[in-house]
Amino acid sequence: MALVEMKTVDGVGTITLNNVKKHNSLSKELIDHICGALNEMKTQGIRVVILRAPAGVKVFSAGHDVRELPMNGRDPLTYNDPLRLVVRTIELFPAPVIAMVEGSVWGGACELVMSCDLIISAEDSTFAITPAKLGVPYNISGVQNFLNTAGIPVCKEMLFTANPIPVKRLVDHGLVSHAVPKDQLESFTLSIAQDIAKNSPLVISLLKEELRILSAAHNLSPETFERIQAMRRQIYDSHDYQEGIKSFFEKRPAKFIGK
Ligand code: LCV
Image (cartoon, rainbow, N blue to C red; front, side):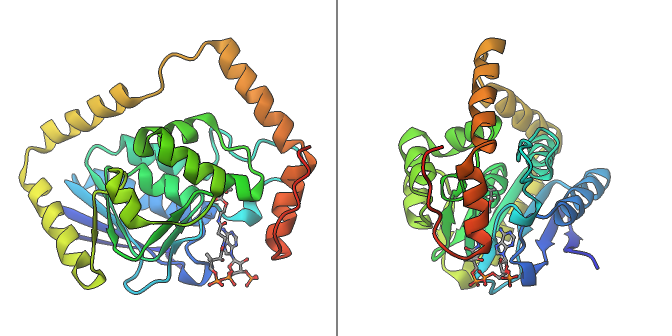
């Protein structure tokens, strides 16, 4: 069963995440379908992509599929993790990708949405970045993405509290481009997409890649990178990582003990 729906009209492509019974949790299978749809649209020369969930959803995406997080001391977010792959696919897609958000956005789905070029949201949506709630040692390129999009103060509040943040606050901080009434979301997003589709696809593709390179991480020495990786390994080898995941499935708050 296709976990995403694809539609293309006049150079505007729409990819709808359609695994609503699983709250569009970002399983490997769903991510494979998203990347497949993006690759198909790249072949078709689509000039702008809208990434959305079905109209009326309560949850845009529940984030990384927690069932797919390793429990055996392996890094939960390696370079080839599906979430990393879809983030890179969106960042390298040669045309703008607009996240049209309705409902709540959780965990890795915040990074998925923030890897898009614009975020246009219903005005009652919330965004929660949850590694600290689950005990997951988020990876450095993911944190860089959050930092690039949210800026330090909002980034720290979202990462440290793991609370759902109302989208209006994120508009104030420039993280989200627009928050609009739900009944205007689709027409508003389409109008922006059509404005983009009228412009030079070659220039827009160049501008997107220039901005990606310029906003990428500053030089990290190999020693600094390895120190961060060692810090992350200590966490995904820790009691607290196991406790975070266990608490999720037992539907109870985690009892972290700091080791
Ligand atoms: C697997 C799920 C999920 C899910 N995975 O419905 O960023 S990081 O580092 O944290 C990264 C590792 C990450 O992204 O982790 C995931 C972060 N996501 C969250 O913390 C959101 C967890 N989900 C929820 O809080 C609720 O499910 C929401 C509020 C999204 C929806 O609540 P609602 O009451 O409508 P349920 O909680 O009853 O969920 C329905 C089924 O979907 C599963 C959940 O376990 C439940 O399964 P069962 O019916 O088998 O109990 N589910 C929800 N999210 N991310 N499975």
